[in-house]
Image 1 (cartoon, rainbow, N blue to C red):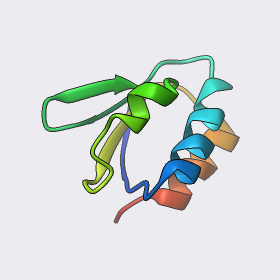
Image 2 (spheres, rainbow, N blue to C red):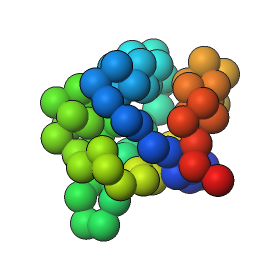
Image 3 (cartoon, helix red, strand yellow):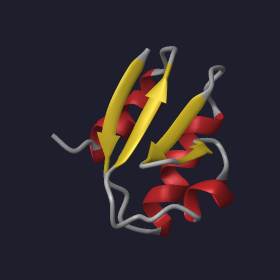
Image 4 (cartoon, helix red, strand yellow):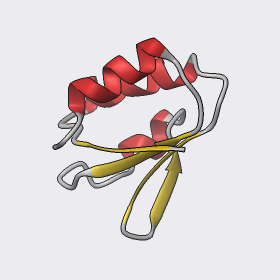
Length: 75
């Protein structure tokens, strides 16, 4: 299980994240506080409070998706 914190600042970044997530064959959960959404759902992702860092949790490997996560990762 891999868990990373990311900061997505707008619709363009959310769209890029979801498009990369859709190509993965494993589940991707995105959450903050008590709110949990499917990382492959554009509506779910756009419904999140993008002013907060989001936690991305996934159990699998996909090079393209991991590059997108690394691009927006908060350290």
